[in-house]
Amino acid sequence: MAESSEIEVTQEDYIQETSKETKDCYVFICGQILNPGVYCVSSDSRICDVIDMAGGCLETADICAVNQAALVTDGSQIYIPAVGECEAEGAGSTIWKDSRINLNQATKEELMTLPGIGETKAEQILEYRENHGSFSSIDELMNISGIKEGVFQKIQDYIRVE
Image 1 (cartoon, rainbow, N blue to C red):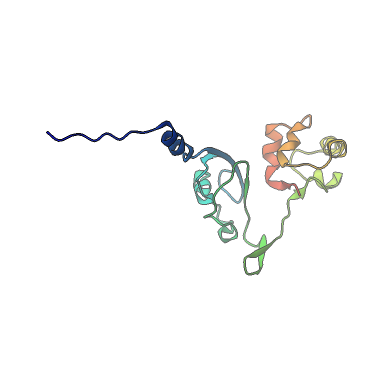
Image 2 (cartoon, rainbow, N blue to C red):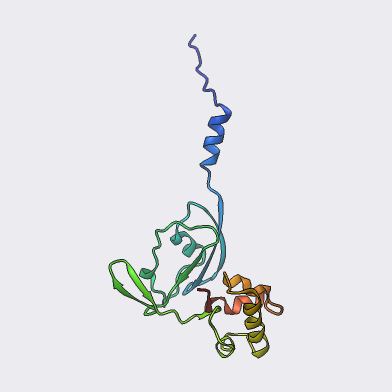
């Protein structure tokens, strides 16, 4: 009768193996995409996976402007530009013609061009920026009274932070 060989798995082996597992990442995809929004993906996902989850790119998208093979990172924003929104400058570099409004430099009049932002909300944004310093992310807008998820959803594709 042949002896059966058993494999012994130590706790250290188990910890090493489970540490290789992927974690969830939340990424925001916007721009020329069918269903912009926040998606939960595994940390080994690629940008092309998020594009697929979001229903794909619109016909107006410049799909060559984004490295779709890049790995996603938790908390990142993926912006899919329109054709003509950026122009190549040379090997590997791109100049963006970004028409989104920079929350850290916008005037009241510029802010008022955003959907759902009137004079009062524009003034609140300027006041918040004055009292709290530069915005670190566009999500920070939701700290302002009167700007919640609904308004944010309307303007998120039109704003940026630098």
